[in-house]
Length: 330
Image (cartoon, rainbow, N blue to C red; front, top):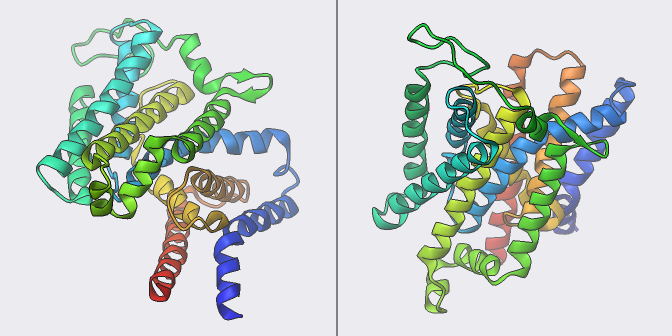
């Protein structure tokens, strides 16, 4: 009986918690359960969801990409400088950051697969290096329209309206970032569950040696996962720049914890017991609803890290209690 209750709480606990939080905030604030506010919640989690999907890919192959936050910071300022400093066309503004994200994924894979540095240490090191690179590149300044340059001149360019539409526009009344997020979640889910590459990623993460003996090119699969992680983080960086209309240094730092928390909350959604994109989306929703509701209750912003930390702690506790129970029954 006790085990059955634990299994049910693991399977449906996260979804029940989301509904309870929704009902609570709807009861204490009449403006919470409105279309505009719910739309804002979905728009606010779109960037975190993109980052979290990338982290999910790395976790599926039994890795962990800690560099995603710094990739967001770097690609946000690169995107901004391509428009404000260099006045590049939209296709270049979007393509270059994505290539940078892919290149950082390749670097992570090289350090992990060839140099054999453990995933956490390799991506942690890359995180610090990229953090220094993007601050050096911008001289520590945020990027905005016609900003004052260090030589006394003014930057010639500004954010194009077509670019800002990606982060601020609407399509049939639905924010564009929300549409992009839902498409990304659907495509990633279909890829992981209905393609050979997706299944190979899960097999590689489940047992690397067994995957190798069954003919799967393990290193190539891991490389693919880290490149995807970098690309999704880069898309998040582009969305961030389009949403705020500037290139903020350290934009990605606070998003790392939120994305990791979303992934680990997702472990338990519908009893998956493993990294999965649908669960990650629900995890991002849980965090977004919490932060939005607490903002409407006028909780000080500096207390939000406590909430995020508690959500991550809860998700880790539930995940590892379940995994340890599962191992003990095997």
